[in-house]
Image (cartoon, rainbow, N blue to C red; front, side, top):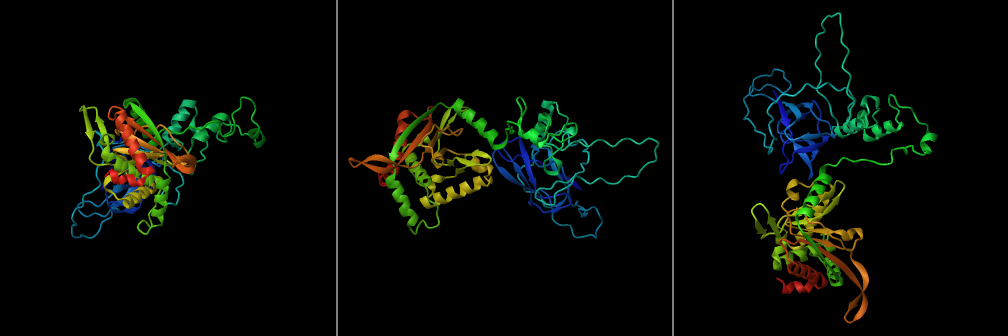
Length: 457
């Protein structure tokens, strides 16, 4: 029997996901929970496991397509209760195996109508790599009826993604006249722009010689266009919405503190050379994160949430520490659950794992939600200070500036010391200026003199 797998809700009510790549092709045999595709939500790249064991009969969507939750994405041929083989052929009777139910959580909303329009077969070459290939459902041969009238075969729609089709529509371009330069003849944005500029070699466009392309005249577009457009989706779309929401709902206040962190850097060097921390990656961020966690014990208002709906202030008795991470997909803020319960070594381990997972685009939606306070390390980019925007739902975010050697007053004399600036933004509904100042002063005191922690715990 044929089973359709519909795109599930991959977390927190997300309404759509983009198919990044298929790990299987038509005709492949898959097992229960085998990874069949990679999809990108607004929060993370997620590996999609198969809810059925059987044979892949049809891939309904191609890589690069944004699919709404609940829409079919793949069909499987699975054995029915009578023990019929997935291939449809008869086999000898066998003892009935216990029925296995799919254990993937959430299969997406079921639409009112399960029917869908027939899809025209697409005839294009298929790449051999199973990680990226897409094949369509094979067309069964039908008996030919004798007729005096033969209809013309329907023209094949050019391969393109929805954003490219919209661009072509806006520019008044017939995609049938555009030659695709992407994989398997896929029409890209650049192909459409080139066609409009007259540099495409597609149908109806005049070819431009190399000399003409190299010397554009006044009013003539440069080769490749003078601008590029990227669809707003995925992490960038979510980040933009979150930052706008935060900036216009929470009254931000920012305070700055510049401190001599030479003692903290000397401690860091000793810890790196010690046997206890061998194999751990210790950085200024590690010490700053630990200092923040200690300072929160004395200033719990920084670890709270404004519940607008219930008109309550929620103070958390745990700390899920968010770490702003710049990734190829955009800015994400995964968090370390119960970071306040971790030792310095375990905190360093968690920070390293978080960064590696974020850079690989494998952060799970669960790790991107539930944060209570955040840190952003702008110092790695050589920046001294800034005004960070709160992560939505949180009361504060601490920005770490670059550690620089600067002339500094030390024991009554001017000496070359290692100096850092701290920037603290907080929600003024939750945190008064005094509370924010005391918290920032506590973090600075620990980093300026790590021994001060003995007076705080």
